[in-house]
Amino acid sequence: MDYLVTVVVALHNSSKDLLCCIGFLRRQTFRNFFVLFVDDCSADDTLLVLKNALEKEALPFDLLRKSKNDGAGKTRDYALESGLIRTKYVLFLDPDDEPLPDFLESLVEKAEETNADITMCGYERRLRSDGHLIATEMVNNPNSISDLENCRIIPYLNPATWNKLFKTSIIEDARFINRGGGEDEMFFLKVLPRCNVIAFVNRVLYRYFIHGNSVSSFTNCELLLLTRNGYVEVKKYYESHGDAYAKFYDLLEASIFVRFGIGATTRLCLTYPKKIRVTLKENKLFFRKFFPNWFCNPFLSFKTSFFGGIKALMVWRCKWLFKLGLFRIFIFDYKLFTRVFKKDVKW
Image 1: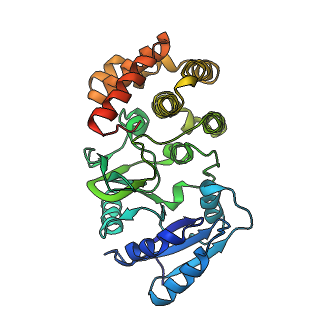
Image 2: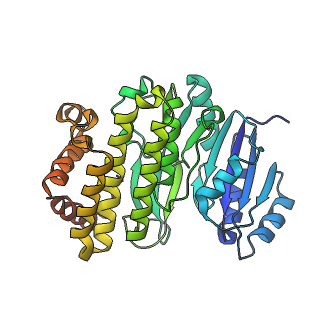
Image 3: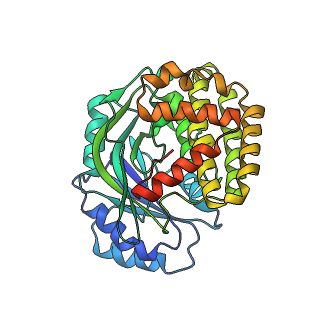
């Protein structure tokens, strides 16, 4: 049978989540898909659980086993380079999350209707411990967008891969590069200039679970450094791919400021308050060295932000605080907001 979608599931010590993951896949109302499990050297009984479960399920699949444990990004890259993805679409699923039953059907239907290169859906972020709802996101976008190089909403789209259906043809040489942080965004930014249309299903079709007790994602100094280096690699990728990518450079720069300059910086400073001064200084130097024109980026201007809504105006405010060395003000505001309302704004 020729399948329409390949679902790539990266596994590492995933035995506790596998039965649920397989159950969610089995309950999909869309059936024309193939599952490619890739095991990243699991040390538990992941493979045994997988074998026993799939013997009872009529789920078309293949299994790849790596010889070296080197993270989710490299595991997905292993799948991309395996030659086993021959479908029109590919999707990267996390085994510890919950795709709702019409997840695949709705994404494929929208992709076929709009001829989209990437199709995204709404999702919930919840705490794994008690199911507490942290945020509902990606449910207020247009039906689809084109003229992507001038689209002001792109820097505000969550670049995670798990709620996105990709046309396999746009991936080409794009890879995740294992950086421990920001790998999904780096992949998304690499394939973006090859897209003509991005479409949206503005309903919650996916539940993303956060482990731990914090409403903000954990990061540390080592991850922050690896993430910085990853963005430098993406910049080089753009520079080596000609004019088609040069047209998207402003979007690249703006996206990195939103996700890294605001998001990753805030998370690190909240986790390690004693490192706020050093972190802010190093990140400001990073932008000055590798993205020297970031402050004048048209996607971060007041005019663009004014028509982009409250979140865009907040980014414009953050830009000035970052520039003036007053970003601590935003960190304090954000900390107060999350504590009082038990909610989170994903940057």
